[in-house]
Amino acid sequence: MNKPIASLSLDLDNKWSYMKTHGDAGWESFPSYLDVVVPRILKFLKERNFKITFFIVGQDAALEKNSEAIAQISNAGHEIGNHSFNHEPWLHLYSKEELTEEFEKTEKALEKVTGRIPKGFRGPGYSLSPTVLEVLAERGYEYDCSTLPTYIGPLARAYYFLASPNMSAEEKEKRKKLFGKFSDGFQSLKPYKWQIGEKSLVEIPVTTLPIFKVPIHASYVIYLSTFSKLAAKTYWKTAIQMCKMTGTPLSLLLHPLDFLSGEDAPELKFFPAMNLPIEKKLEFVSEILENFAKSFSIGNMREHANFVKSEKTLVREFAEA
Image (cartoon, rainbow, N blue to C red):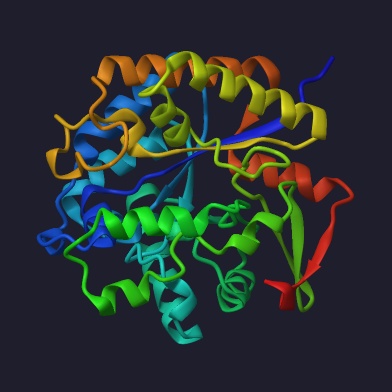
């Protein structure tokens, strides 16, 4: 019996991008941990025979100090996706001209380092707007995966602001839609197609727990494990079963912090689960992916999008973005 389709991706947010979103000083020099985390992730994936999609920030690809690490990703056979140039989770505030420049710069930087022009996009902080979709369609993108159907976006944003006491009122205003709205929880978990004029674009949501719409991406499950490893494992296995029962094609999201500890990046110790020793964290990520692979046929995001194109899929009008 064939396993249902699923996808695996990683948002390669760098140290500076976390610091920038958090409102910390020093991000302007673009401190990086890519030389540490990329080889670690690639070794981990190779040992498990996974080929995934890496969504890469254009600013990182444009810096020579990151070229070797990013080239290694492409050379290992993983798909390269666009994660914006400046990693600002307020793309909804950008004009069409600003977005076009953002995409052009990212595409050129990624092509120079990897030899590939991305065909997929994920907005930083799940930032999306009708204008973003319009520019994606005009530039020949095949899919987007910037939606996170969850009710707890405002809660996550409130926690983020509490953990960022030095953030100015102006910076908070830019981030007022970070992690989305309560109403995002009513969005579909199953892939669909945006109809944008005569063009269409596949949307693959980041999967949340069916019905309850709480996050199930790896960072969240790892965080739960700091309270109870048994509870976290049970939660993840329940999520897999509910996805299978509801016919939800699971798209699992990873982050660099899933492969780092506070010792690797002391500036980011405030993030949940960064107190876990790296050996324990990697062991738990391995268990998550092992359970994932038992139930689903896992590919990269473009493979998932191509499968969606071949199926009869819900179509949403561009104006509903």
